[in-house]
Image 1 (cartoon, rainbow, N blue to C red):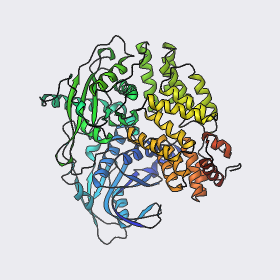
Image 2 (image 1 turned 180 degrees about the vertical axis):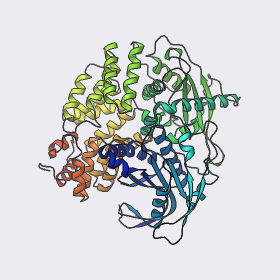
Image 3 (image 1 turned 90 degrees about the vertical axis):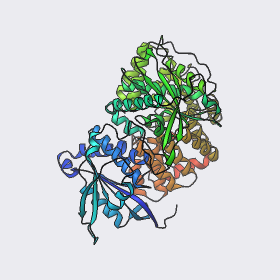
Image 4 (image 1 turned 120 degrees about the vertical axis):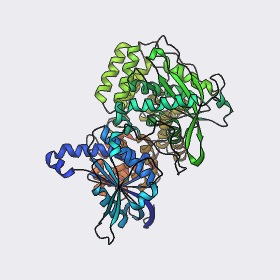
Length: 619
């Protein structure tokens, strides 16, 4: 990584919390916690999902760079709209366009000062743009701007023209249109909301999103007399392996989260499909509220599947398969190909597998038959509730709902495997206890059929027990049986890295990023570990930092952040990172316990970094 200063034209994005000093005086600890939570779950995901890069966090403020003003404005609009809907702290945002000097991870120049001045002029809940930025978006995006006149900027001789975007942000349920999207001047795919933003938006935006998508689909059906009938799979003529995304389902009578959890179950059921690529649930759920064409562009999908539940789960799901199509001017669209009407069900539990079979049959691909679960409908609803609460960060409520599901269906393999995975807690559980938890989780899953989660648990337990060959064999079995399971493929990349097979690990990790195209904490954590083992300390620290921005409790990422910062000579920052580990202060052996290397070189790189960070123990 070169330290030579670079000049670059960029959209400069400045954000801070309105009234921060007053709120800190009233409740210092509470305000700080809200600021950190807002940065980590709302602001950072929105910036990255729109192609921006966070340069630094400054207390209550954020400085970021974007490749275009349009993407910066859309990120700002989504942040302000979601902040208003979820009653977050009031924010002000300033956006400028100009040349900046980038050096040592920071940005400098008068254009940055102008962005800071714009941010201070913005109204709470609003966005202020310079004339240079306004010229890039005028008549190109469907938002109204107000001319706020010229204003002085410290240390600059000429005043700056200011434009406001603000009032519409808090009144609209979604800035995504419920009609065909306008033609955009940029050919690059528009990035959508990140999972953390969508979870915060919750049910408030679900009704509007459902109405928008469903209304658009109805209009598309009425205007598309040439759309193929359900029995004629036009997708069979598609060359290569199609990329398919199952969008979050919508519903009339059911809770929105029930419909969304069903769509994720359908995606999991498609993990065993071959000769296709299925977009993982972690990325697909970020498409909630987007038009099908926008979702396809966000997820890099050739086809999208939209589903709507007109009644209960037993009334079935209406599916629509659409193909992504690029219109004139780079506009992203989608054309309906097939409509699969809802089929009444005798039980809810087999529904996801049956929907998956219907979808994959349309593409002429096989889906191995599985034993359909015979569990009460109430148990399935409790499992949906558990998964939803876990995604919202309510772990206590999630575990309670999972226990209810297991009381209703004590022999249900899926619920038992989920309980074992949550006990393992690979991402956020204490690093020092991970070997023990891996063995316990494998014991919990003992005797269960070899579904994806069970194979993952057995492979991890074998690796921690020193049987790396057996672990890799299980990972290969997992990859063959479930080629579209992003989590299983990620575990395979992790195990290859632990075995010192850097090239194979990176190849599999690249494949994971195609299955799960939006950044995920554990993917970034594995990437950080690969960088550290290769001596790419700056890249390792950056990847770990990005993982922690998405999941602040990610323990493996904290270990890697500590080790990579120390390797870079940033000893104070490394010590602070190590202090964030659960159970800190930990010894070197305890911190490294979560990394069961069977290869000497990557183990040595990690332990050297932890030793430089000041952890007690032999490197």
